[in-house]
Length: 177
Image 1 (cartoon, rainbow, N blue to C red):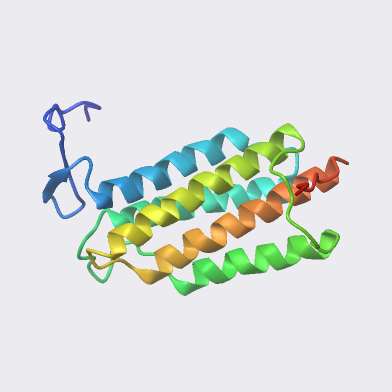
Image 2 (cartoon, rainbow, N blue to C red):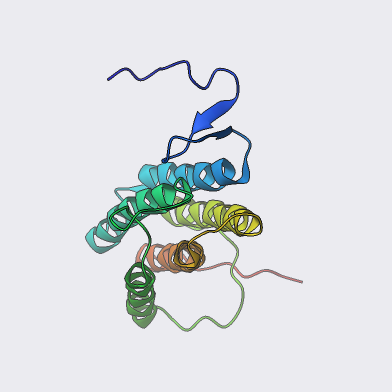
């Protein structure tokens, strides 16, 4: 299979159903930003913590499902879609990580160790992907579970950033107002 086809040279691309849309369409913006988040998460692994690495690997696979979901305006019964259990898995991971952390009593500044800061960065890209998905949902049907997944993933990445920083012995900086 060739990597290049030339089909996108004029600013159009194929969706999963083979319909053609502009590369600037809200649908492409949504799944393109998810792709960016996925690539960024790939730069974070390995973190040095097996449990976090395993979760991030699962997240990367989930993000491929989110992309497929957004790239398919009319999914068939057997097409990959984000399900409620994907969101619930993130919630379980957040709850488990929170048990290891001191209670959150204020905002924290993004940063800390290199890995902690990278997780905070990934969180912001996921938030942008979520905004793009919400924008898409304003004009086209979108799986609400995919949007919920992105929302919860940003919470998970925030929590993982705190967790890695705590394990690395890097205290959280708090904003001064």
